[in-house]
Image 1 (cartoon, rainbow, N blue to C red):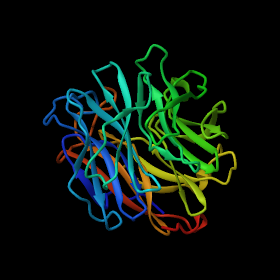
Image 2 (cartoon, one colour; image 1 turned 90 degrees about the vertical axis):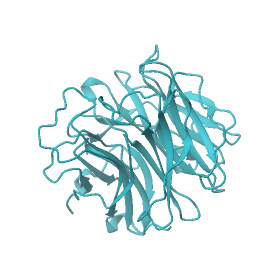
Image 3 (tube, rainbow, N blue to C red; image 1 turned 180 degrees about the horizontal axis):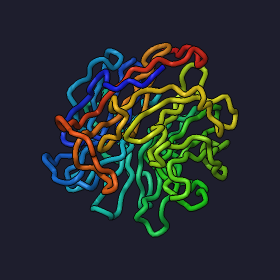
Length: 360
């Protein structure tokens, strides 16, 4: 199985749509959330702070083939609303996590908001932490009725990056923060969580430490997120030594990791038979797509996440920015660009038989 090099569906095209999340609700609908920049025709990268950043949502009722016009989830005036994740609770309430950047290089606040009407209206946002905090991955509805949101302390805080488990036992009205032990170098941040057994939660963390940049570290809680193990370095690493966050989900009988195997170049999925979730079966990884047929890096991309859309099929959602302006001065576009492209995209990927059939 080789890489695709063209998206199957464009979910949204805009000024600088980025950092999507996707989920399936109990009624079969798919929901995709992402940040859009309200500033058009920016001369710098839209990757940075924008006072017009907002959280949008789109819905699909046909398994991801077509998507609705985007509606607004959160648009806090003067703030950059970003870092979006979404899950569907057992009662089909949609829960969205995100954070607001109050200024470039300044304080951030992680929030949650909910919708009881399929994304048509949203509750006032509730803070999940008193820290200088950020969010990224999807909230997790635990089997004991509690909710866990994987947030992290901002790099601009006095203490620097650190992962935080925000846990709520009252439906998201109030939150307890549990600090997760850091890795050597202290640069763990955007992380994903999955409850693999009742009360047993695994977390995979993005690493910004220079010596181990691009690696994922695994932590574990066996008490509903109240305490966490010291991080263990997994065998998964971005081939470009870049850094982007992981996503965890079930497919059939397997835990599946969706990740950028080479950020801004290509994305894969991989599973594991390791009961400790440290050694992943990289020899059996599933190539999902590369952004260009020639294998060159595009300007900005690679916050992939996926959702089951068939017994042996997943939809992988990402953002793709084809532009001569890049978020990193060292990343130069050295090929001719026919036209700019700024989209939330989707790729349908068939899963291996060994993963089993997913019950929708």
